Length: 130
Figure 1: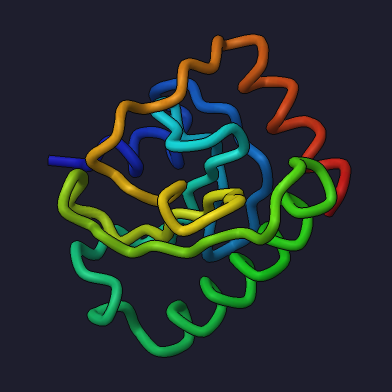
Figure 2: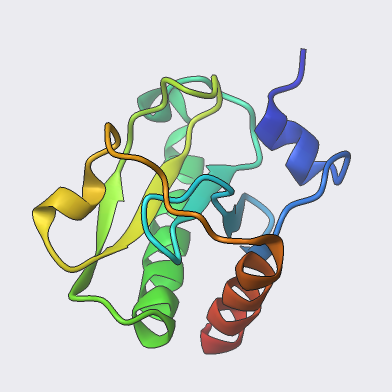
């Protein structure tokens, strides 16, 4: 069965897409830790990040770096934190999270409430900064 991320890639379910290329897609996390929390997902459905083919793995991180720079230009933050958990969806992905301090990346804390319109605006502004 296709993961929820594959369904987003295939446009079977909606998402606030920030950027996309042949190997990866970036979209807003609908349950963000911080405003601007963006997911970077390879288009090939592989459960574990380190099981990706080398070319996809390298391209994914390059893509993530470009998106992170755009997030920093768009969302006030000290830096963009990077996390790879991969437990919640069986499809490799990278979390890019605008942070002010270490505790801003604590996944045990409640998620930030960001409405659909604000997510759309953030996605559009980050995309423009690319």
